[in-house]
Image 1 (spheres, rainbow, N blue to C red):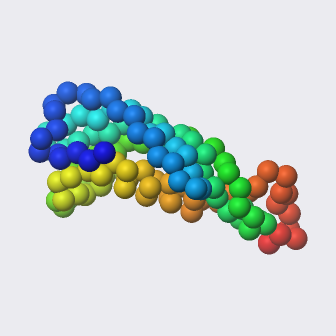
Image 2 (cartoon, rainbow, N blue to C red):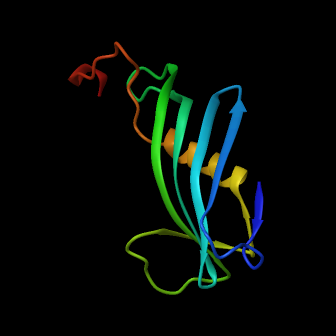
Amino acid sequence: MKLNIKSAPRRSVPFSIELCGEDFKVKFSGNYEKKGLDIIVEGLLTGDVQVTCGVSCQTFFTQMNEEICVKFVEGEFKGFDPKYDVIETDGEIDFEGFILEEIESFRLGYHVAPGVEFTEANL
């Protein structure tokens, strides 16, 4: 799903997007709304994502459950927004690309496989 910032409606629009790959199955649902010149997206990204255990290096699937509060702005953003993560765009929002980036960010976190114990020997 792609959205042009300039032609987006000035009302809250619900959405739901499901993406599947060989190492993930996620759903991103919520609302987006144009406020001023920006698009505000609030939603929940849930599903199963394959990650690597930081202790044993084995891969396993774990549940992703991330609240998303993002402001998409066209061009360069100067300043700080305490409520939203700010993403600069060229005027178009690619929701699928955004979801894939969020999955990769989640994978970069520290994960421990079920049944693996973290001990000093693992350091």
